[in-house]
Amino acid sequence: MRTGTPEAVSSWTTCAANDLSGSLAYVDTSAYLKLLFNEVESATFATVIEEWPELVSSELLEVEMHRAAYRAGVPFADCDQLLDAVTLLALDPAVRAHSLRIAQPLLRAGDAIHLATAASLGADLGVLFAYDNRMLDGALLEGLPAWAPRPGP
Figure: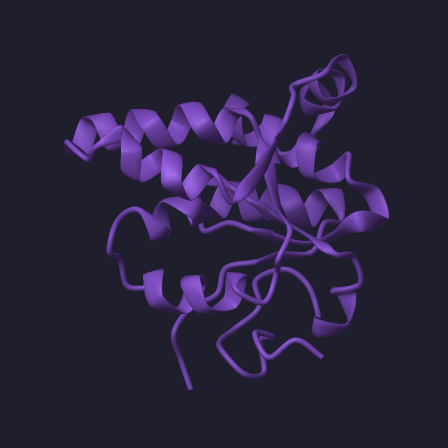
């Protein structure tokens, strides 16, 4: 069993520990930015993702990370170093079509693309890491195993 499970680290958001059957960890921008900026959840998230050797995301992650870095005055090289650890998946027609149909009315376009990309992984998806509540609600509606690792007892 992975040591970075909810029992060892923090609280679940939308799924149970036994849902972690796939080998891929999907990282949403709201989660992966925790590694670029020092936030309350940063250390916990960094520890938890070490348990997942295969990180994936939509190619949208690259754009969102660089835009956040640019706004904060963080060198793009810092983003590139983090992004080297993630396999970026293309926004293909099937993902685009799925993102149009996600039934979470408050979901933003980028989040819909992330959810559809994560869903496209099927049984290979072990967990979707996110900290945005709309994204987490959308993951719940899509039946995806989502987790926002937080420090805690």
